[in-house]
Image 1 (tube, helix red, strand yellow):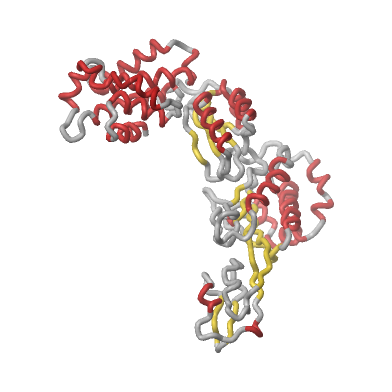
Image 2 (image 1 turned 90 degrees about the vertical axis):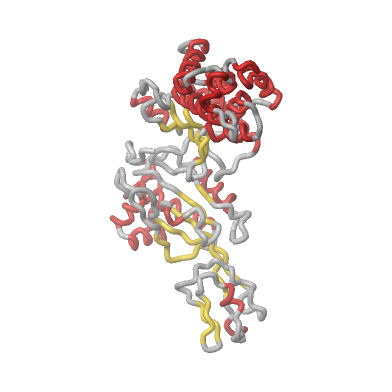
Length: 452
């Protein structure tokens, strides 16, 4: 909230006018420098004579920059709107004058903090109304237009003519130039706010309908694209396996390969519903691969050489196994293969080299889902040891979903209806790939089940 920013600056010994403008600068990404802020310094204390409150003048200075970026800018001049803000300030605080407000709100301990906070509330509510949030006149965009821009990654803000613009990222990773471009786009075409989604994309908030095409073009100039909606393959998500101490493979590189092959390559393929893919670098499952339609989990299957085991009283393998799948029984180490999750953290821990090697690979879970109805993905009965194998199984899963899924159902429902064993058998075979051209050429799922 704007009042939180205002309180921060006021407690840092900025005057009322500076505090409001600094708060708006941070909240709405106005891009002001410290020298710019100095322009309102003289308005503190009612211009030093108890006149117009500094909180109000700071708010008006912020409005001068915010107003031209709002949907209302084309409808009328800022003069009329600034008068409206003054009246709203007076209604909320009883007066616009410093010498009237001080006896009402000033305290020895907090000085004029209460005035600053109330002024921030007035400005925020006013800006929300300008951007079609609260107090807007309602939505005048047709259902067809809302549907059309949704396909481009613009989600409608109910009751308004505004949309949230979904910007794709490389698994939540953008470079500094792209970040600047996103920030500038939010300021120029939206309401200045950017939100993160659970799938590591960014959403620029409060984009008016007439700014949809301009923001797409502006982002494209910076190498960014919008999208990630509809009944199709969604942007791929991965953990930061490349930097995590437990990561077993380069998640970014593998995710990029999948993104190019299936998000970009299958962009026009219509599915029964959305299809989400997630890559976890290890069995820690930080990005919850098993709650996605198709989850990929890094594995390192330990290679235990039992003849080298000396049955040490304190076994380093047993000590380092985080899930207690390794146990010293009757002087010999036993690995519970059903319990072992192939995290690889036991490898190299035996001083007598009984556990020096491990096979790198991937576990695949299918049919996961979160939301109103949660389904945990079930693993296929094989650890895959090459990326090409994983890519082939993923392609077959998509072909199966398109061919045998019912429009409107998620992959989890398709698997439940067909039976897991049946689906696994098809994913391990070659028939789906042999029928690829036929499956992709079929006129199916013209209206998918995804609503977001």
